[in-house]
Image (tube, rainbow, N blue to C red; front, side, top):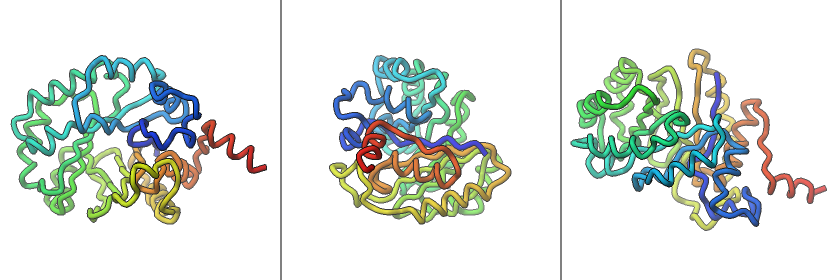
Length: 263
């Protein structure tokens, strides 16, 4: 299995002097991030459709091999609950045109109140207009998404049901497609002001995730995105998972400096 492991976003003040060098401008953060990681999930698209000017900068700041995933805007998934959203979908896809070749997946994160039954026919309509260029993992949080009916539907359509480690959701982690999309989110216990350091030790949970992934032999790709709310520092969580999977540890400048100071 190929693993693509990154963080849910890159623009966090708490990462300055812990991940980003202290004198690095925030406008240079994505460029630095893309030298360490090869993928990220764009979280900001959930809150607003970005301008093409912003997306062109994302393209210019990242190397050719770098990959993005992005969340569908909340106006599509939460406000309009997948109904009558064609114009918003076209606007969203158009906005991402400058990074078209770098997009791996566009994530449909649904609200906990949106059941499989309410979503099924709407999703059929949406997938009729979505291009085949990307993967479209679905993060259903209502319990009905883990029913036999939903899993059968998703398998038939080859739609990936996101495996999310998030407070309040019991995810049975069914395999419904030929790839996996995993989001290590956690709860809302850690305030944003404390991002950039490990506040909750989840080493054992991460080991279990690694064992789970290593036990799967018939899926060729897993994308895993780590959030600051999981342990407090997304890059460290990503590194911990990498090491448990036998992958090379990622080293960033601030980590290197702290290692040297400890000798």
